[in-house]
Length: 110
Length: 209
Image (tube, rainbow over all chains, first blue to last red; front, side, top):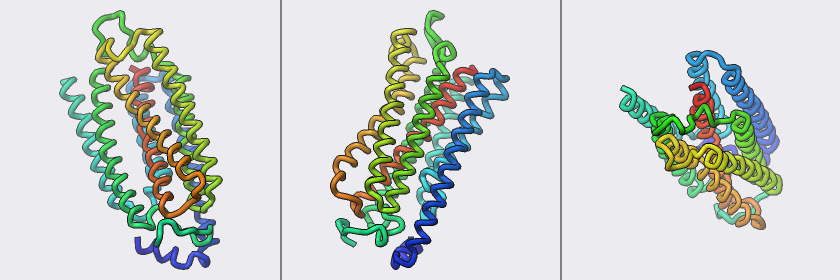
C-alpha cells in the first residue's frame, strides 16, 4: 500500500504515465475479454459437435478454470499489488469449495 | 483526507478505492465475503451435481431433454459482455470521468436486465412446457436453487448499481463513493465467475450427460 501512496503524492508528475498505464491495462482487459469469448465458443462448439463424453468433460472444466483465472486476475484486478490477503480468502474459499463438492459427490455416488 | 474533497482528473489518486481507511476496510471485507460466497455456491453446485437427473418417474424430463444451448449461449454472451462494460466503467472511474463511468454502468445494467429477461423466459418455459418445477423432483429443486440463486445475485447486483447511480447521480466522484462503485463492480464480476461455472457444469455438462 505504501508504494501506491508515493505515486499519488505528486499526481501532476505522474499524470501522463498513469493515463498511459490505465490505457494499456484497458487494452489487456479487452484482449482477455476476447480470449474469454473465444474459450466460451470452443466450449459450446465442442458440446454441439457431440465429441466423446470423456474427452469433452475434462476439457470443459479446464476451459472454465482458465476463464475464471482471467476474470479474477484481469477483471477483478487480482494481478495488482495489495491482493495478498484477498488471495488468501479466495483460495481458502476455493479449497473448501473443492472439498465440499468432492464430499457430496463421493458420498452420493460411492 | 476528507472524503467529500473535490478532485480534478489530475489530483485524483491512483487507487481511489483504497485511498481512505474506509475504502481499504471495504475492500478487505468484500473479498472475505466473496470467499464465503464461493463456499455457498460450491455447496449448491455439489447439491446439483448429486441430484442431477434424479426424477421420480420416466415422465419427468432430464437435463439433456430440456436445455437449449442457443439460449444459454446468448445469456453467456450478455453476462460476459456486461463484465467487460463494468471494467470500462472502472477504467473511467480511475480516470475521474464520472459521466463516462455512469454511461458504462448503465450499459452494464441494461445487459444484466437482458440476461435476467432470458432467464425468466427460460424458467417459465421449463415450468409450462416440461412441468419441470421447484417441487416436481429433486432435480428440479437442485436446478432452481442453484440457477435461481445466481439469478438472485444478478437482481441484487442490478439493484446495487442502480441505487449507487441514483444516489450519486449529482454528486460526482469523490473518495466516499469511489470504493462503493469499485466494490459493486467486483461483485458483478463475481456473478460472472459463477455463471462461467453454471454454463459449464449445468448446461454444457448437462447436455453431454
